Each structure stands twice: as structure tokens, then as C-alpha cells.
Image (tube, rainbow, N blue to C red):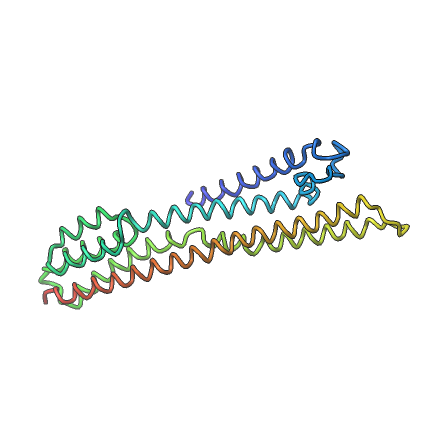
Length: 260
């Protein structure tokens, strides 16, 4: 069920791209030969794109998918960063921990929310549970806190990186589909010579159009996916680094405050 959203996006994107390709780009009014749809009206870009063949619809779907997941990643990562300024949140929380005001630190976590706040809250709550436990020595107390941090981190980090692999995959397969369309288009272009060796100008034009529009579509999809992937990968890496730095500071405070 957790992948249901991804499946719905992929299916809808391919369905929408097919409808656009077939009924908008392939509208007979875009062609001189009407329902045959082989000769676009001169200057009619929509009709000319249609001559790129069915792979154009697939490439359109990949572009829609890449755009959709880019928007989804932007919204999700922004939500994971929480409601307020992260730097100020870290400062307020650290100040409260230094003073021993653990409840106030937890209140800051509740206000901030987000992945970092969730990890910080897990560590603070666990520290409160074990800090006065006479049955645990200092090392075991910190071990318990670290285990809570690791568990929370393992829950939050995958959410930050979720769907990035989809963008990476689209970046690769867009080029391959574009290359496939280019190859098919060139085959059609050369087959326009026919068995007699004479050139069928109409078929030659269709073959070349199919090759070029698929090339453009494949490169366009790859560019969108690669840029989005690199952008969000960098954004996630920077946020994870900030989380690691904040957790290190908190761990050092706990180590200094923990009782034997």
C-alpha cells in the first residue's frame, strides 16, 4: 500500500499523456490528410510532434512523472524540515538541554516538528527515562540514548530519500526511449527509399520527424529528471548533515549531564 501513490502517479501520467497524444496532437485538423494523419499542416507544431510516433506519448508520460515527483519531493522535504527556522530551533533546544530544562526542549520539538525534531524528541525522552536509573551505569545510559537516536534516524532518513530513485530511473530510461524512437524513426526514413530505390518524400519526412522528436523528448525528460535528482539529493544531504551535527551536540550534552 505504501507504493500505491507511486503506482497511481505512473498509471495516470501514462494515461494522460496517451490521451493528449492521441486526441490533441493527433487531431485530424492538424493534418492536411485528415484522418490519415501523415502530413501535418505546414507550421503546425502539434501535428509535427504527433508524427514522432507512439514513443512520444511514453516520453511525455515520463516527463509528467518526473515533474510530479519533483513537486512531491519539494513538498515532502519542506515538511520534513519542520515549521520554523531550523538553526534557531537547534539553538533553543540546545540551550534548554544545557540548563537541564528537558520539558522545555520537548516543547520546542513539538512546535518545530519535522524529521530533526522527531529524532531530537526521541533522544530527549529516552534520556529522561534513563538518566536517574540506578541500575544503569553511564555507559549503558548513553547506549540506550544512542539506540533511540538510531531507531528514530532509521525511520526518518528513508522518508527524506523516498522517490529519488524514481527520478534517477527516469533520467536513464528517458534517454533509452528517446534512442529507441530515434532508431525506429531512422529505420522508417531509410525504408522510404523502397525496393525500387526511389525516395518517398512523405515517408522520409515522417521517419526523420519521428527520429528527431523522440530524441528531443528523451533528452528533455532526462534533463528534468537529472536536475531534479541532483537538486533534491543535495538538499537531503545538507539536511542530514545538519541532523548529524545537532545530534552530536545533544549527545555531548547528555554525556556531560548523565549521572553514574
